[in-house]
Image (cartoon, rainbow, N blue to C red; front, side, top):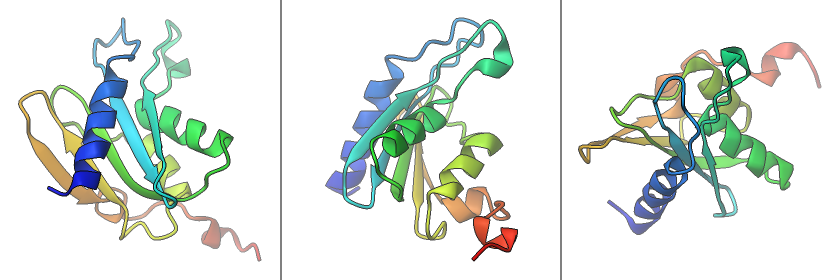
Length: 135
């Protein structure tokens, strides 16, 4: 594994420590590397009104976008069993991935397992802005 991927995985694992998941007890951390090489992290934040919860991946995207970055280069996710991002997160990641085929999503679990997927593999039919008929 290359040092950049190791750094991304370490950041996702570190972000997971800040998860607030008293309802599901499913802590998730995410890290995004943007096109400029900067890292953005997020953890899931649950709410008693479950629909108001935010996933770690979307928390990281919100941080990235709110600081002026718009292009995702790669993503790492850390959780106990290697679960991939949910559909809502994949759609959100796709919004900021100019080329989903080139965005690698690395998923790690508590046993040290690592899987690698392109964003296109995980969300092959993402709803894209080019389908809206806008200029």
